[in-house]
Length: 324
Length: 99
Image (cartoon, rainbow over all chains, first blue to last red; front, side, top):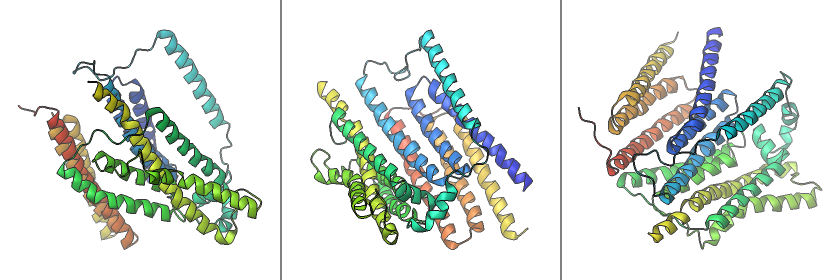
C-alpha cells in the first residue's frame, strides 16, 4: 500500500505542475488559437484533478462545460474575430495580443501577488481536518428524497442556490440575444463522415444525458451534467447544418429556455404557501419533485448552452460578409 | 497472483506502450497527416488494450460493458475527428511532407 501511495503522490504532483504549466502557456501564448486549445487541455486535466480530489460531480461538470462547451464557445468567438479582422496577412500569428505596458505589467503583478497571498492565507487558516457540513447532510439524507448527497444539497437542502443559478443562465442568454441578436448558424461543414458520426453520436448523447439525469439520484450526475451533454448534442447538430429550431421565431425554444427556472419558481411558490418555506418539499413527494425539477432544468440548461453557442456565433459574421 | 492479474498487467503495459509511441509520434512526426496517424494508433489500440485489461478486473458485466462502450465511442470519435482534421488541413492546402 505504501508504494501505491507514493505513486499516487507522484501522479498528483505531476498533475499539479502540468496544470500550472498549461495555465502559464495559455496566458502567455502569442497565438489565440493555441491559447484556446491549451484552455481545453487545461479543462480536461482539471477534470482529472477533481477526480483525484474525490469530487466526481465537479469533474463531470468541468469536463462537459469547462472543457467541452466553453471550448466550443471560444472557438466560435475566435472564428468570428478572425472573419472580422481581415487586414491580417497570412503567415502572421492570428490576432497577436497587444504587449502590456511596463506599468500595467507591474500593477497586474502586484494584484496577482496580493490575490495569491490572500488565497494562500485563507487556505492555510482553514482547520486542517474539518468535516464541514457533511455530517449535517448525511444525517438528513433520508428525508431528502435522493441517496446521493450532492444532489440532495443542490436540489433540496440548498435548492434556492440552484434556482438562482437557473436564473443566471436565463439572464446570460437574454443578454447574448440583446447584444448579438438571434440568428441561425452561418458556416456549415458537411461531409459524409461527419454525417454518419452525428447520426451515430446524437442518439448516444441523448441517452447519456438521460442516464446522467436519472443516475443523479444515487450517484454522481444530475441536471447540469446532463444538460451540458444535451447542449453538446445540439452544438454538433447545428455545426453539421441541421438547425434544430428556427431560433428567431420558435416559441418552443423560448419555452424550453424558461421551463427550468419557471418550474423552480412555481414549486418555490407552492411550497411557500403549503409548507411555509421556500422549496421545503414534503418528505413523501421529495423524490418526485426533485426528478421533475431536474428534468426540466436539464432541458433548460441544454437549450441555454446551445442558444449561447448559436447566438454568439453568427450575426456579426453574416453582416461582415454582406458588406463585402 | 491470479492469472487475471497477470493478464491485466500485460494488457495495461501494452496499452501504455502504444500511448507512449503515439505521443512520441505526435511530437516527432513531420506533418499533420503523419501525426494523426500516430495519434489514432494510441487512441484505438492503446485504449483498447487498457480497456480490455480493466474489463478483466471489473466487478460486474455491466461495468465491463460500460468500459467497452467507452472504447467504441472513442474509436468512433477518433476516426471521425481525425478524418475531419485531415480533410480540413487538405482543404486549407497544408502540404504533405516529402523527404
